[in-house]
Length: 485
Ligand SMILES: [Zn+2]
Figure (spheres, rainbow, N blue to C red):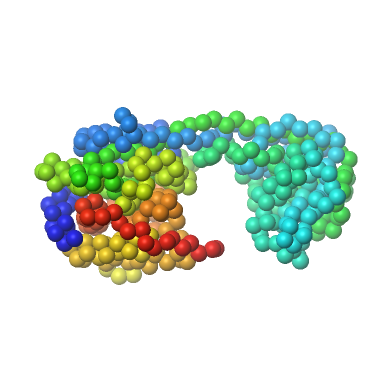
């Protein structure tokens, strides 16, 4: 192992503060418009990364293409209308749409009140008992009665929608005491990774709307509604929900450096190049998050390519992948893990770099020389020993406090390595911790500590070098045990 590192060092030295700054100033430039997934700025960043991979001499990772496209969905227009006995109610002050609602044009002559709309076979709870709701509109109260034995997962709004759907209802109105808590849950331009699910029409309504449906005084409150028995109310109800969903495309950018005697085995180096875009006229440049990781991947690609030119190609193939959709919910890496371009069972490890250019506000110690290493105690017992052996050279303070899966920050689950981990691939996540500029427009290049970033990226490069050149794929001998929340 020590020998492997020594061989890596001359190439690690090609990772300079100057090189890192050069790339990052472009990737986190305002011209990239914050790199929001499926935006023009994201595409521009993808083109830049692709061009770099090409220049470095990497092969395209997806057949003839450097890009792995994946679909995302967006509502480009949404409208809703609700009337009860001819009285029009207002979207969004009287009722609100939930993201899961289907489009609908529905007329009803009656509504079925189903109490809290709870169903649970274990506790023999069935608010739908003796009610026939097939193709009907059901009205249910949010929450649960005070003596309810069910866990919150079974009294949630989505559980109530599922119950109504399972019973054959065609629409559900959920009465909430404070509509502002769910207001505008369905908004134009919101992105989805999966197309809106095939559910039933579902809206949240105020107590006033519920009272109109059920023929009660308009000031009837939740407590009074909670005491009513289930049954049918006659009312003419018209519900219209229009949503126009279009399919967009985002991409992962993938370049490959072919290995030698173990070229059918892989080490995947990732970072996410997407960020938060432009919001309220402000550009979220995402220099640290995760322009720094994207830059790190480019610099490591150049260093490995330089080694290959000098006859020191890695034994395993290195896959350099910058993903998008991370900020929306790790979409790009999820897509890759479900449509891998290289077999995950032959992927020795994924090293993911997300925020390595700054000093986090929670680190206690020498802030000029530290790195959070997350996940090297899981999945493979090889990860920690390689990490420690490489660090003999670098003498970084490696803080492993976020290896604790019970840590409230849950960082282990919050970046792209997790989609490899959940498929059993050993992972390490490199991170500097959050700071005051995290997810703010003020996460800009001028705040990056390039000498510190250089040291971290060189360390990650040498770790990748060791994993790529070792005699065996990393052992997979530590099952990932995820604590229940
Ligand atoms: Zn990030």
